[in-house]
Image (cartoon, rainbow, N blue to C red; front, side, top):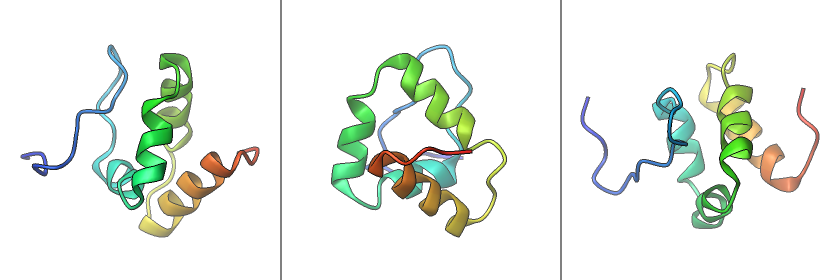
Length: 74
């Protein structure tokens, strides 16, 4: 599957590809994508791993919003 021309490769080096839906949820707001890009590699891996069992767009968007509001995630 081709990447969307605007979608940067934002996954941390050495990790599995970021799920496309998670990348789309990140890209809904430039501020969110900017915050993600400033995370450390360890924080990026934790963020991507935390979305592993989320499947719907609603779940992923909620996860992204909660993560960047600094809320503790289960």
